[in-house]
Length: 85
Image (tube, rainbow, N blue to C red; front, side, top):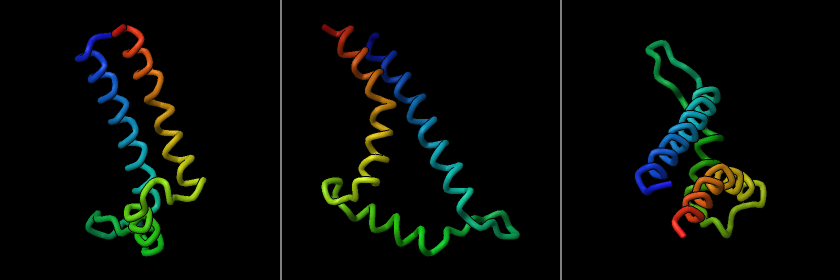
């Protein structure tokens, strides 16, 4: 795997991750008459707390969520490293 190939594979995976998050976010919001989305206050509070929290201080379930995302990327990175050596 070459650098540009790895970038494209990871970029596609990042788009998939972002799309999954947006589907989830939109599903939790209230849609207004004009098509805008309103995020429930409890989710805003939770996500703002998570944003302000260093990874080391997250709860284990929150860390597990981040680890789950890394596990999707890791095989690509390992393959790229393996082919680089």
